[in-house]
Image (tube, rainbow, N blue to C red; front, side, top):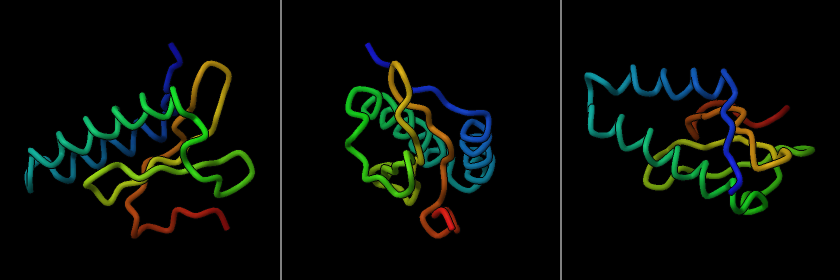
Amino acid sequence: MKRAQWTRLAQADLAAIDDYYETLNPDFALRVARKAMAVGRFLADHPRAGPEIDSGIRKWRVPTTDYILVYRIVDGGIEVVRVYHAQQRWRPE
């Protein structure tokens, strides 16, 4: 089975999302985290599913949210580099 590895920045992004929504809408915070983890598992098994947006960097939207996983293919699966809100400046310059 292939794995989804999460960089420290991606882990911090998920923690920040959780912190932000914790008091506003705790159910949504939990849903984003669960769906992001599920997307990571899906992408580990299907690493080329997301379109390439830069050399070796791909993206995939977390369903029913405005969040995007930015990842790269590595030996044994994928590495989630960051988790961005779609309205953030997340595209490579």
